[in-house]
Length: 440
Ligand code: PLP
Image (tube, rainbow, N blue to C red; front, side, top):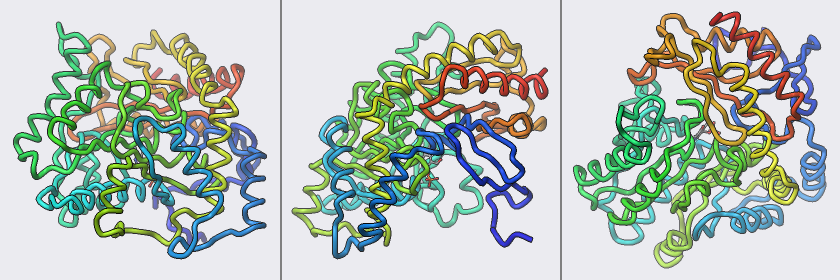
């Protein structure tokens, strides 16, 4: 009997014993194509020799040195590398061990920034419905899935949630994409005015929405308007790129494609590519300087921040992404994947939308293509698809059912950037097997 407290207490997952490129092998010798990189983690596949060599070399030198006393060569190198490629005036990197910690750090950093500036009345965050920002209490409060918050509500800070942007679902007839983008972005302004700008810390959103909506990009102009509103009211824009960052959408930072820069951006998942647990919150020099000129201390910290072995892995990963051309490859293979998905499922009566950017693609499942009527949640389509794909040897990430009263099932695909054209064909074939079995 296992003593591991598993993610799903009713499940009995197979033992993963070996990684081989884009594949994972279990103890019975079954091979799975990792079509979602776990959850948009494994951007380099599962057997990257350069990253494992960097980890081994670092462990041979020094595995850990506490950041109360030391910094380390790989942490310095990785921070330099990230800042060299970061948009806008992002200038400092606060390392964490994962995505939730990165978001939690960003929220606390944003709050303390205003305390340092002598504006303690600012205590409110605004986020979006149907969003996920992590499972620690602050990040969970920011998340827009009411069902995730339900059991913990008395423990959570009060965050307002405005509409997300999802053109396929909510653009109205007769409205252009840009008009729609402006309409939903302006909800932020209305919410700031309702709360009083002097009470608001910031707005947090994922540039391309991952798990909760299935690789949904914003419409053109949406984030430009969001940036404008944040500047106008003096509130911070926090972008959560834990899932969509680190090259996943075809640029190192997803927001580059929207022509804006945040005040704080969170990254994780692809940063360590699964080789080490690592995340980070990057902030501007303006925010950092408020700490330097104020109390001199960010009232936060975890034992493993800036962990030398984790940052050595992250440094090797980001080097491969940027200098090794893998971000460009994500953009290029993303187009191959998109074309293959459209050819295989573009006319399927129950696939309403195929969307995404780079190696971040989503398929929306509907009962009726013409009306976009979602599937009955009681059918548990996403669970059935996940199981059928797994049976066929494909790891993919279906989600949905009912989210905040909005019904809808989708499949998220986020394969490693190293995937070849033939392997994309294999992924689409396996997905086709699962879709035929569940949707006909
Ligand atoms: N933010 C986003 C957008 C995510 O998708 C996730 C995880 O899926 C998180 C934060 C939390 O990251 P982690 O699971 O590493 O704590």
